[in-house]
Length: 182
Image 1 (cartoon, rainbow, N blue to C red):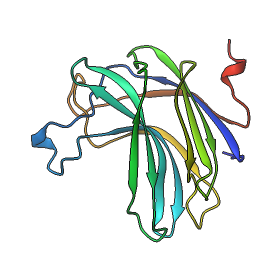
Image 2: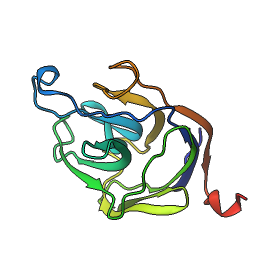
Image 3: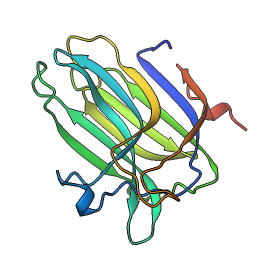
Image 4: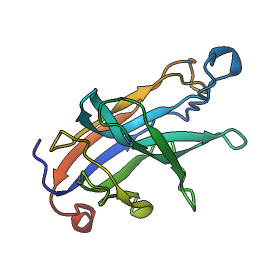
């Protein structure tokens, strides 16, 4: 995997079922609420590998539909894994429909000095745009991108606690890929 200063990543995602990452109170002793990361960008500070930008999945309990959220983490002390974060939801939420392939594309600008940025498109619609963030933590010079299914608890599946996401055609590029798709 090769990274440029302004990289594009592109992947196809398929969710076979609707999931709800929210934990019921009896399964949530720390009161975290539950989370599910679809992919994330991580960088190393003096305390190790830390997520700096994460594409998260959330579920509105009243309609049982899935949506993406964006988590931006700030590490004020480069010798610690302590952070503050901003959880951004979509202004005009685009539903993640189960049993359909979706196109997710992310533009990520690398920066140690809070001049970084991230933009996210979902099925051709820009759903997030965030500027003036630090996307690389000192002393690192790079960021690592990872896709996967990273969660602390899932309900709402056929079997509670089970979650599946399929990924296809993950691409890292210096140009926007969706402009060339049919």
